[in-house]
Length: 324
Ligand SMILES: Nc1ncnc2c1ncn2[C@@H]1O[C@H](COP(=O)(O)OP(=O)(O)O)[C@@H](O)[C@H]1O
Ligand SMILES: [Mg+2]
Image 1 (cartoon, helix red, strand yellow):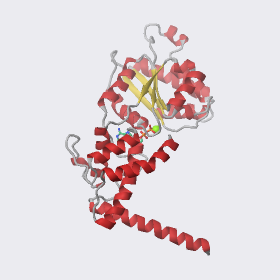
Image 2: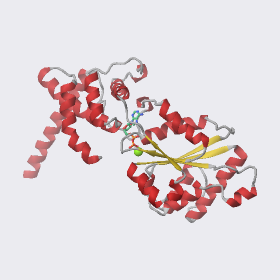
Image 3: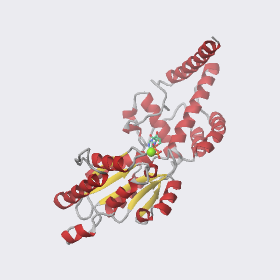
Image 4: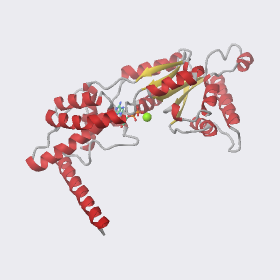
């Protein structure tokens, strides 16, 4: 009985809160919260980042090293991978090789799951009954064939790579080292460079772990730090999301847009607290929406100004420290 009473009080509380938020959204012409989370956001919400993306893609094109995209959780590693995956199939390297791409987004994989996931992502057939080494061999053979016959190098993207079982890394290492000496002597003038480039992601802690536990891969891998958002990017992040929620994202012009009901000072405070991390910018913006919605209910003003941004940043500071 007591539980039922508590429950209904709680539900009432959430419903009231929802109504308050909804009223604010309606006031700014939004159909939903601009700061809701997406598993896979609409690509029109992405802030394009040509300088950094080119650097990443150029590293893949030059084919000298594997890549470890390094950054804290929420810094934009997965998003950058998606952008690179979008661009690579339209590009060719200096030798005229094109790219076959594969993307493994799952983690926690052990050996056979890793082999199967890689094979699936590269659209290479294998039998369920095969051992992981047979699957990986099929991947190796097909990648060699694609290189020789189709002038295609393979770019394999692996999310949060260190979150997989250690055994899975042996398979990765084999692929990272292709072509084998034997293959090279079978095709002496043709197979004279690596044919698979690994693009891995993870945090700095995982990179350090890789250096000590997997030097064989780490030594041939270039760590690339995801840069934090500057204030302009933070502004664009908030702007795009507001336009999107207002149903006018297609008219968004990155050189000329509004961020009302936010103001510039508020965005700068939010970005400083978030240290340029887009996930944290979203969390803080949502916090600002909540405070602004309360204000709107009481004082009819929906704005997010520096006062609100500061209040929310301070309240979240503790929380952000803990998740980092
Ligand atoms: N360039 C970007 N443009 C727009 N949103 C971004 C961008 N980079 C990251 N985000 C957003 O920030 C959040 C975290 O990004 P994500 O790529 O998942 O980070 P990570 O993989 O480093 O944890 C997601 O909600 C994502 O949509
Ligand atoms: Mg990620």
